[in-house]
Length: 82
Image 1 (cartoon, rainbow, N blue to C red):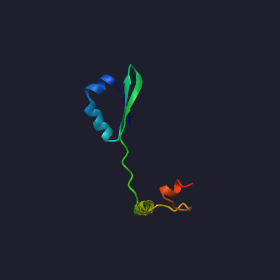
Image 2: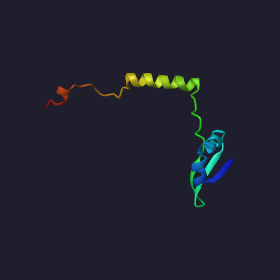
Image 3: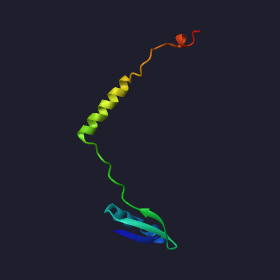
Image 4: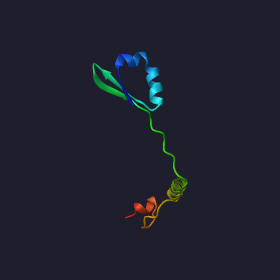
């Protein structure tokens, strides 16, 4: 449910409106009748499934080993030979 309150009410009773937001409500704060802010709950972080965790670990291991890009290796001296 959305509540609309004035800035003065928000200043005087902020903890009351924070409690409402924790329950899932949204609170719109107005200044001279114009909406200027919205208090709303922060969405819970989405957890990864076991398959996603496994895929992430596989990717991290691949990145540690590096990916072959082809071509030949050379050192600094070889790069500056003429």
